[in-house]
Image (tube, rainbow, N blue to C red; front, side, top):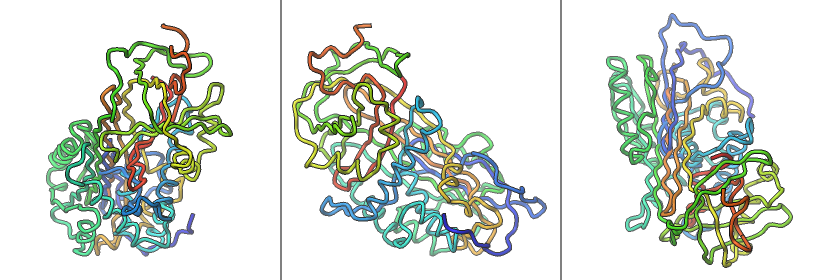
Length: 444
């Protein structure tokens, strides 16, 4: 963590609730009346206003499908978040979009200065390559929005600013250039309720209706000056679907003592698969149509606890396990549960634990790259994400908002990949090696 430094005397600001939802992130900045005094310490976990695409900051070498140091940093950031979001309860399901979270942070970084900027860059593991962060995400957006794709993948960014507030043209131009994020003026001061509904409608549209109410009631008030939205939506169809007619109810073992029934899907196919004996896991890749995206599933062997695998997991290991040298096309009998997850996270507390402190502090935040007014700070950071996996394919969305029975085992005679106990899963953009979504399925 970088040492904080005073950014100069600033007016005090009242914190306003912020929400991150689904494949969407929004960041809200607030300005408080001069009569309000700052609390003696930062509050506990809250919601940050940040909306839009969930993605690790765009740092991928897209042309040759070769990862550069920044793409590796993004992957490492995703694995760190996976561990942090699930550490309190090993039995809790986890699902989030690292690309959405990092892209929202990237937009904040465009307007941050001094130690505020240094802390954000450090948590993105790209302290000496800020320009590459932004240009990398610019390249990712171009790559993702390729015409003619056999899947639906959309990353959308938007700035919603108070109509009476002046934002620097350089900040607006950079957000548009690197993140395709235009500034739309709303009247937070005169009608915060109407503004909130307008933003929620935009998020709902960009996430295919999966995230309808990113911003909760009263989450926007008259002190709000800017909401950064980042939304990600994905709908993909398996290259070869599971056979729906043979899906049946089977037990899913949450732990050694507890199990619940799930709808278990079945498929026999030749797929990229590997067994990592020294780690006690199997790794399976399920491609979507067009093979530009795929789901990678990390399944512990019988008797190996998922928490043990998760604690030891690094992005370097993930790269090795999923490399062509290890993943061989093999005939695999697959049993995989049909499931739907919807998760909400207060990311401000998570980011503070990683060392991003100043941007949330009314006295230290330096966002002078956004506006000449020195009274801006990030009030809350929330993330909401949704995923649904079925026989046909996968539908997932994420959003961020920030305010300034049939037996105890699968029925295959020699089951090679039987996901009837907790596992990790990742939705990966193959050409850029970008982790679009990360999750842990522990409990139906």
